[in-house]
Length: 364
Length: 194
Image (spheres, rainbow over the protein chains, first blue to last red):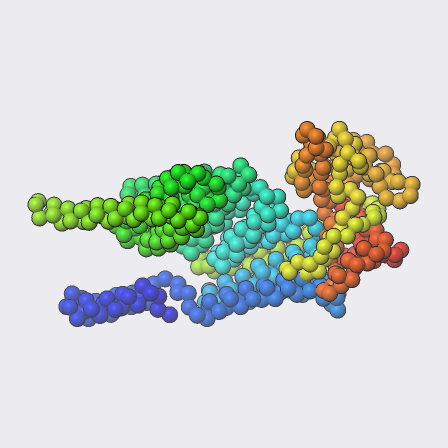
C-alpha cells in the first residue's frame, strides 16, 4: 500500500526527473529504497488486527450472556484454551515470518485473557469494583506486550489504562492519580519499542487526563491550571525545538497536544465558569491571540498538526463566544469588531514582516 | 518482535503460563473463601440491573449499606472518609438479621463468638459537620449478583415481592463474597468450581 509520503515522493520524483535534476537511476534507486524501508501497515494485517478486536468483543459478549447451557467450568476452560491457542498461532506465524499476523494473534490472546477475568468476576459475583478486573487486564496486556514486543498489545494496554481510570473517576468523582503510574509504564514500553503511533496514543491520553483535572480539582474550577500547564508545555516544546533540533520529531507533535490542552483550559475558563463580560472579553482576546500565534508559528515551521488545531480552535472559539454573548447583540457585535481589528492588525504586521525579510537580503 | 525470535516460543509459553496462573489464583482465592469462610445470611433490598458488557445482574442492597447514627455507633462514624477501608462488626439479632456493634478502621482485636467482622470500603461519606448527621455509603463486594440473560427482571420483581436473603461467605480477614441467594426459603448456590 502506498503511504501518502511515498505517493507524493513518486510524483515529485517524476517532476524532478523531467526537469533533469535527478537521473533515471537516481529516481529508481530512491523509489526502491523507500519501498523497502519501514514496516508497512498493509491491508491484510490491518484486517487481522480488526478481526482480533471483533473476536474480543464476541468473547466479552459471550461472557455477558451468561449462557447456562454450558457449565461454568466449561466456559472458563474454553476461554483459557483460546488464550493458549492464540499464543500458539502467534508462535507459528512468527516462525513463518508473518510478524504482523503474529501480533494480531497475540492481541487475540490478550483479549481472551480479559474475557476470562470478566467471566471469573461474574462466576463469583465479584462486585463493587469492576475496575479491579480492568486493572488486572491492563497489567496482563502490558506484560504480554513487553515480553513479546507486540505493539498492538501495548496499545490495548494504554486503552485499558484509560478505561480503568475513567471508571474510577466516574465512580468517585475525583482525580484518579494512579492513572499516571499505568500511563508511565505503558509509555515507557512505547519508547523502548520506538513506536511512534503508540507515543501519539500516550500524548492523547495524557492530554485528556490533564484536561479532566480542570473539571475535577477544586470542585471543577481548575481550568486556569489546565491552561497554565498547556502553555508551559507549549513553551517547553518550542524551546526544545529551537535548542535541540535533532529532537524535532518529538517536539513538533508535542506542541500540538500542548496547544490543545492550553486551549481546552482557556475554553473552560470562558464557557464553563461564569466570568464577567470584561473577563470574558479579555480571555477571548487572549485565546484568539495565542491561537493566531500558534497558527503563525505552525506556518513558519511547517507543523501541519498545530496549524489545523489552530484553525479548529479559532473557529470553535469564535462560535462559542457568539453563542455566549448572543443575548446581547451589541456585545456580540463589539466582540467581533475587536476580533476583526486584532486579526487585521496581525495580518498587516505579518505582511510587513514578510516584506522586510527579502528586503533585508537585497540590502545585504 | 525482531531480535527476540530465538526465544519467542519460550516467551509465548511464559506469558501464557503467567496469565493462566493469574486467572487460576483469582479462581482459587474466591473458591477457598466460599468453601472455608464463615457463612452468614443477610436480608436483601433490591436495586437495579443490567450492564451491556457485564450481562444481567441484580444490585443488592443491605441494611448495612447505609450507615448513620440510627444503625451504627455514632462516635465512630467521624473516623472514616470516602475511599477509606472500614471494618464493621455485626452481632446477630434474635429475630434474624444483624446489628452493627462496632465500626473501626483496623480489624478489631477481640471479636465475641457469634459476631462477624466485614471488611468494607466507604463509597461515599457526607455530612458530619454542623447540623447534618454523617452518612456512610458502604461497599462490601457483595452487591452484585449475576444472572443468566433475560432473568434479571424476573429476579428483581421477586426481590420486591418476596423475602430474599443473601448467603455471604466471610473470610478470616473480613473479606466477604456472595455465595448465593435464599428466595422464599429455597437456596440458590452454585457448586464450587474446584
